[in-house]
Image (cartoon, rainbow, N blue to C red; front, side, top):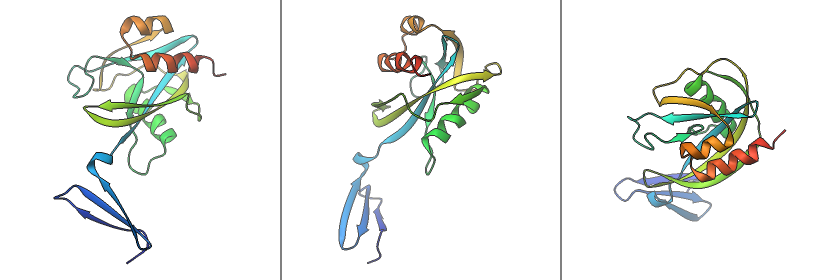
Length: 161
């Protein structure tokens, strides 16, 4: 047996990790997505993005810039990548997250890491993932129906200097 080897059984949806002579089993139920959300501030306003009506998950909801962390990608790098992909803005992403929480995406468990960013330049160019955007006060986020946990994170992010 090789230290750190893997075996998979696609019929059972099981991944086995061999460490020394011990076996750890990871089932499909243990799989969890990791995503980032970036709250972009321009002065005292924060960017809200409305997910496209054609999106499979969360169609029509208002949120920050968000996306999944790719395999072997650092969450901070994912946050910077998502900002460029979804808005085209030039921003400075703060390296320390303002919040981390558990959520579900289409019924699957997901960990969301929230970062604060400051707008440094450019105008929003919408990707196919969003239908609209607004620069909002924190109070307006509530009116748009932004998820409560994200509003809490925005309040914390506003205090970061």
